Image (cartoon, rainbow, N blue to C red; front, side, top):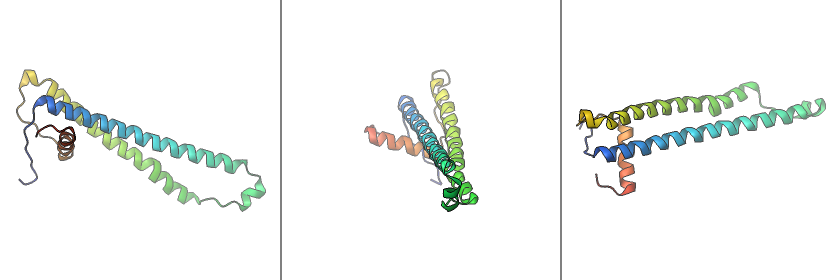
Length: 133
């Protein structure tokens, strides 16, 4: 109720789910880095091609205005780096929760508050794995 959802799950299953979600987030970071790298390669190739043209051909070749290039850079690089930072924060939180779960034997944690997106991802993972909730 009121935005709070509680469900019971064994610590082993929760740990598996968190590790799965962590690996998924890390692979997403790598995919975003790959997109940034691909964009930067494309830009370098276009710039090299433009510089290789003779001055006469350069005069007649259309080139995007600098403000268009800046917006393109913002959308393809800067925003993606911001997204990577957000994902890294999630991974840091996951590392903290995983550390708590691994130390559970000593402290016997009975209740844990997790962000809703992590809980949703664990529930989706359980459905995909076929484990009972």
